[in-house]
Amino acid sequence: MTSTTKLTWKHFPAGQNGFFRAPVLLEGPTEALLIDGGFTLSDGKAVADAIAAGGKPLKSVYVSQSDPDYYFSLGAVRAAYPEVPVLAAHATVAAIHANVQKKLDVWGPQLKANGPQTLADVVLPAASDASTMSLDGETIEIVNAEGMSNRRYLWVPSLEAIFGGVLVFSGVHVWVADTATPELRAAWVKNLDAMAARQPRIVVPGHGTVDAPADASAIAYTRDYLLAFEEEAAKAADSAALIAAMKQRYPDAGMEVALATGAKVVLGEMKWA
Image (cartoon, rainbow, N blue to C red; front, side, top):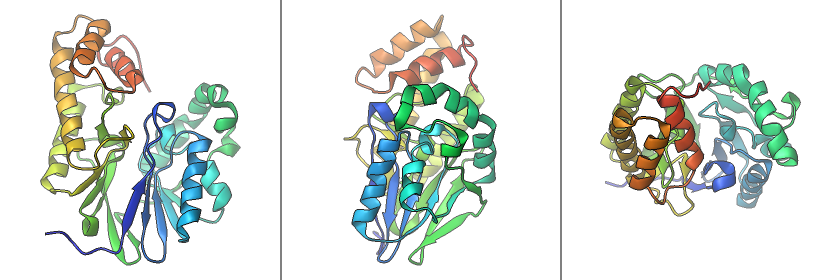
C-alpha cells in the first residue's frame, strides 16, 4: 500500500565528469534537505540553484560517504547557504579527515577552478551519529550497512524510498576498489538483499546514468554486477582479463574507471586507500 506523504524528491545525476553521482534534494511543504553533494563546483552550483528555485529553506545537508564525489561540490552550496549545518556520521568524518589532503593533491590540479584547491575550500561535515532525521515531521532513517565499515543508505518510510548512496549503482560499472575482499563484497550483497526486502517503490542510486530508472531495478543491477564480478575474478588470470570479461557482460556500462581500478585492486596489482 502506498503511503501518504508530504515529501517530494529530485536527484541530479552528474554524468561522466562527475563520476555519475546523483545528489538528492528532499522537499517538504516548508523545508528542504540535501542528501550528499557531488564532485564538481559546477554540479554544486546547479543543486544550489535548484534549492533556491524551490523556495524552501534548506534545513541541513547529510553526507553519507567519505569519497570526494560526495562532498567536493558543497562549497557552492555553502556559498549560497552559509549557515546550514552539514552533517555526517563520525566514521565518515574521520575518513574524510584522513584522506582529504591526498584527494585535494590528486584532484585539485585536474579540477582547477571547478573544484576545491585547498583545505579551506572544502566543506567538512560535523559529526553526528543520529539514526534518524526529520523533514516537516516525516522521518528519514539512516541505515548502517551490516558488515561494512563507513557504508550507509537512507530510507524514507513515507516515500517507500531508498537513497542508496555508494551502495547502489545503475547503468555504470560498480566501484569495488573499496571492497577488495570477497567477504566485503558478500556483505554488500547481503545489504542489497536487505534493501530489496523493504520492497521500496523508489530507489535512487548514488551513481547512475541520467536515464537510470529510480526503482528497485537499481538494487538488482548492483547485486547482479557484484556476483558477475566475483565469478569473473575467480577465473581471471590478471586484471586485463577481468576487465575484458566484465566489458563483455556490461558492454554499455559507463564509468570504466571503476572497472579498471577495481580489477587491479581485487587481483592485487594495485593498492587502494
